[in-house]
Image 1 (cartoon, each protein chain N blue to C red):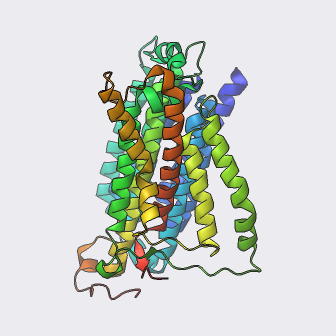
Image 2: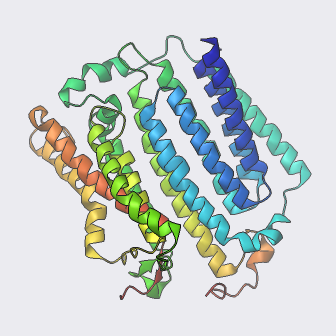
Image 3: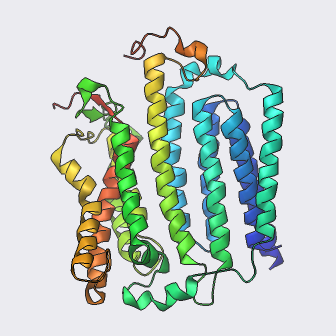
Length: 113
Length: 315
């Protein structure tokens, strides 16, 4: 067992949990949360690969590390867009689920004005 | 060595326990709080993996900014939580998905255990070419020089996301101010905090940008801290969010990508390649881009969190 193996397995489990949450949770906000778990698991893989690629001069391979930094920013931007979309949907329908019953008959833009 | 492994195992178990809690928690608000804790623990994991630059990023954006977004959304949606919680996936679906997820995770775990040895790495190349940019932080070198195209396009992605957020405003509010206007309460502790913290935070943000050349840190991390300070002042009511049609806001938003593009095409024009920096001027050029990018990151992230326009823009 080494540090990279421990956190690599941790990343695998976080990815699995995130995948489960994305499919099973019916509420969009919970799907967004689960999606962030999934992406953090994938980022951990990059960390493990970077750590394994360390040479005497550097503590890790800087290329995967830089890719993860880019990835974290893009994931945050995607989350911001998804959350805003969800809040707008909530404002328009008064519902926070995507079920068909919630969508039917809700007067547009009547809630929270 | 064994103590290290024990600490790693405890940390990994904690991370997974919180990830599990985030997945199954009944209330969205509790799940969002759990996600912030998860991000902070993940920051420690990144430190253990020797990636301090990524740890700073995870703490500032992965946990802090994303956490703030999710907490705000869950508190806005709280009133409707009860009716939505009744909706559940069926037992068969849940069992099937659990099985599929476990198989997926097991396959990934196997891949981790059988990673190639010796590991392929670009670290020697990055270290050997560090002298070309005059910067000692290898991650900043990769972000700003060796893979500058990724970083430039990422700035563009941020802008597209912001345009998406803005376009969710009602038509007649286009160009207005985002979010509610918070009223400052002169006696509230939040007001005091919002007066004391930003001067320090802005200095820390700029320090991180400057230090990022040679030590962990950089434009993203510095920009995020400055964005957090701005948001703190906005939420405490000490300053109002600018109207999104404001010209200086728009200029700040495109400063980073624009300078990046100008330098990029300059490289093309001077005969080398797109985004090839002349070695003699590499460091000043990179610093200029980093300064412009810090401004852009701070303004973009602040406005992404502030959300679409909800009020008329007129003062």
